[in-house]
Image (cartoon, rainbow, N blue to C red; front, side, top):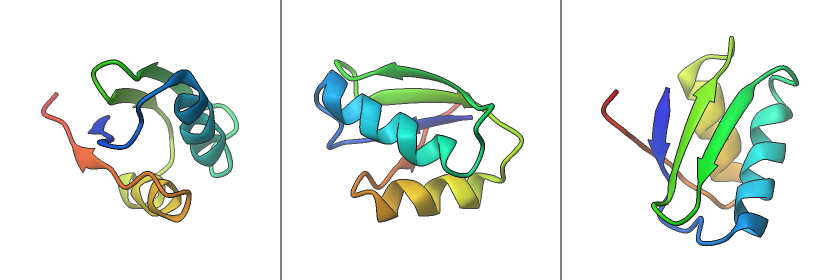
Length: 66
C-alpha cells in the first residue's frame, strides 16, 4: 500500500514514520521517499491500523494510487 505524507520532509521524519508503522507490524517493509513525501508499505496490518498510527505520530497520510 502507498501513502502520501505531506509533512514527511526529511529522513528524520521518515525514521519516525517507519517506527510508527513498525509499532503495529515489526516485519513491515517500508520504502520512504521524503523528497516526494511518499511511502510504500508491505505489511500484514490493515490499512486503517497504519493510517491510525501515522496520524497518532503526527504524520497523517493520504492514500496513493497503486
